[in-house]
Each structure stands twice: as structure tokens, then as C-alpha cells.
Length: 303
Image 1 (cartoon, helix red, strand yellow):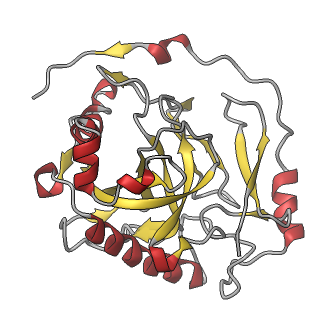
Image 2 (cartoon, helix red, strand yellow; image 1 turned 180 degrees about the vertical axis):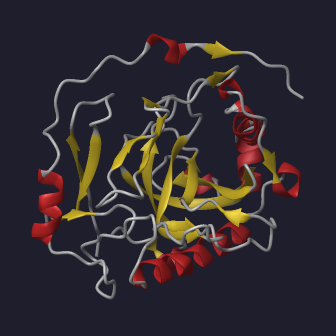
């Protein structure tokens, strides 16, 4: 059965009040973390991806894992909306950036996260580090600039293991199956061959994007080498098991597991209860201007 999803904006864009909620084809509010299936086509290993950040933009939009129904909202740091810095030669995010639902990678600091979840209580046997308590991130490399909240079907090509402040943070490389060039991409080597420089730019972006915030460069497992498609898919599948354990527990810890579709979950709520969550927020209003310093470019010598 083909599933479709729509989004509903609430609050004022570019402010702390702004949130993007999700509805299914029946008009019921859902959690993009818990209620959208991991697979779009399991037999073909095609996954759903929830786009959080469109390519070339700077606002760090993300699924709010601690909020009821997990709407997408902008990350906040020290009380201010967070924008990723432009580290030359990059402008904003250089791919459509998002997450795979119902997958979680573990290590437990507090067990919980929904999509393909990176469990903070589970030590990754490949990297030796714990998960970051977030859904698995996806870098979609197709031609289309997607929209925040768009749900697309992607073909997985490989993965990069970033170590972010001692935590495993997998970055899955994928392409939208509806991209006109999708048939030509079936492996990480195809990305290297058909988009020369893109993988190197991806490592550079993740290595240095926090430097303007006064943080050190990020490190990588496997000497920054990309692992292949089969390896990436095995990682995604294992994180789905952690997610299932999460939504089956009586407590999600600091993560909010409220959902409307996971029948075996103690966090299952009615469509009326989900509607009430949205009704507590204000209708979509006028957008605030984006701060001008978001366009500032930072220059650093590569180490």
C-alpha cells in the first residue's frame, strides 16, 4: 500500500515557536520518528527518509525527539536558534539532510530515540563508541532540493562513521529513488565515480563544521573511509531493533515515544489525543527575518 504524508506548520517560522507536524493519508497526526515505517520497500532495501534540512540551507532543523509527536523544529543553543556555519568552500548543508524513521543506534545514557535510533547505551562494535541517542542521519545526494518535512524513498549507497565528542554518529549516503540519475547509483563507488569530490567534501564538511563554534575538528572511524552499501544496510537494520525495544518499554527515558500507529507500544495514543497536542501550539504566523550573519563565511586551513 502506497503511503503519503503531509505537514502542517505551527508557530512563526524562524522563531522558537515554529514546529512542523506530520499527518498520514487519513489526516491523523503522527510522529515522524515512530509512525513512518523504516522501509518503503523492504524487498528492494528502499528506505523512507524524513528530510529535516534542505540542501544549501543553514537552519539546523531536526526531529524533536523529546517532544510529543516529535515535530521538526530548529535546534536551540544557549537560548538561540542554531544555524550551521559556512566553512569555506561550503554553503549550508551540502546535501538534503534528514533521518530514517524507526531506527535508533544505542549506548545508554538514557535509552531512547525512535527512527533508526543510535542508542547511547549500546557500544558500537565497529567504532568502539556509544550511540548519540538520535535517529540515524542521512545525506541525500540527488539533484532536487527537498523541503523540510518531505518524506522521500531512498536507495542506500554507503555510510561514514563520524565520532562526535566520543559518540558514534553514522552518516548514511543515499539517493532519492525518483532522482533522474538514481539508476546509475548502486554503490559508494558509483558516487566516487559519478560525483567526483563529493565524498571528500562530505568528510571535510563533517570534520570542520563545528570549528566556528570553538569546538575541535570531528574525528572518524575507519580513517574516514566510507563503508559500502551492505555494511550501511546492516547498521540501519540493527538500529531498528533498538527502536523496537525503545517503543516497547514502559519508559522512553528522556525521549518522547508518543505515537498513533505502533499497536504494540504502551505509548500509543488516540487521534484525538494527537490532535490535542497540535492544538496546544499556535497557528502558523509571519516569519521572522533570518539573522544576516548566517551568510558569513569562515576560513580555516585544513589540518
